[in-house]
Length: 282
Image (cartoon, rainbow, N blue to C red; front, side):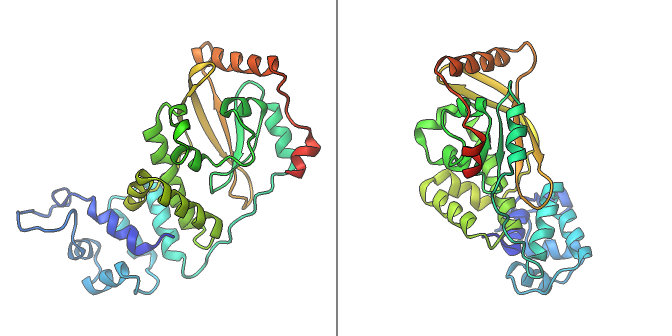
């Protein structure tokens, strides 16, 4: 699904030669740096770097990876992704399962004033609290936010920052593909998104990676209007690959009033969270 060769090619294409001291002229036919440029600047032979981009090189050393990361201007997230891709031939991580412990369901229910949900590396929502179900207007298990954003045209207006959301989703899935290259369900999801969305195909080809741990998340809810929330991602312990996401509103903000109204509308309609027994069976 993801490979070192492709990542290197896309990263060098975005580097401005002038920034690294290489003069340019009209005869330059490639975008960004040439293979020869990267090899020279990182201190490796041109032949070795060519073999890296062709997937024929042996395991690159940490020193070589550090040099390449510096030449290509990689940020912390991209560096980690580069090192994982380089290690794939030695150790391939097994995709984690998706069972949510009952104790985590109890934690979700303790969050009563903000949407909270548990999501895996494929962006499958595995569980959510009552107000999260009201926000999305559907049961949480069975929702995949990548499909929701890219493939459900009727839901596009739900995301006030749809363009940014698509960048986050593709960047996250790129990271997941680097961590779990042998996950068939992840590969199937990526193929489905590529078949169904031209924007996904374009963004996937860029090979950008993103690790969003917090930030603004805005929704246009059909009943309560614009909700400008703050998202915090908490990685759950162990090798579960799961994250707890909490979407909070600033005190005294219109979004806080909107969430309170949303919770009240749910109570008026008789909404109630499923019993613990039912959730465990899910």
